[in-house]
Length: 187
Image 1 (tube, rainbow, N blue to C red):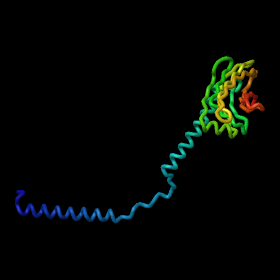
Image 2 (tube, one colour):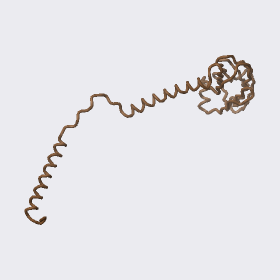
Image 3 (tube, rainbow, N blue to C red):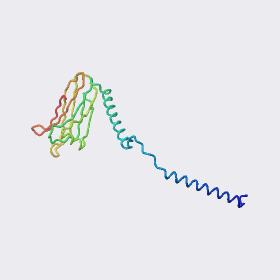
Image 4 (cartoon, helix red, strand yellow):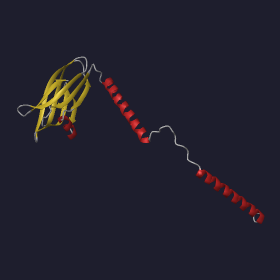
């Protein structure tokens, strides 16, 4: 029956009609106009990513502040800062801070940190909870003055912590005799 000429003619005719129908349908689809663009403004993916980054950074800063308030309540907080006297040609290599005989902070300075300190920047080197009363702070600063003349200064300071936050500034300066000196200040 498949080899019968009448069957073949009908099959070929049907296939031809189907092909013409498909071709006409496809050309009608391709000729159709594209859909009109959406009128509402759509943010690009980059804008969305930047907005999310901004939100995340804001939340991180807020969480950092909350964490500091929880870990270091203002009644017991002690913060120690390091600064250079402006215009001093003294380079700090490292700083060590001991509180009541225990090492609480040490830092080795990078070139960028030294530049920032020389321009008047301040570094918070230590934050802790400290009980009210008398305490002793030991500061050890190692560095170079002028060219390559190394130095190490060890100073002891007594201070009193009252209820409320306490901020101490450790300032390094050059004395009149060209020796580096360390002073401590309430900030």
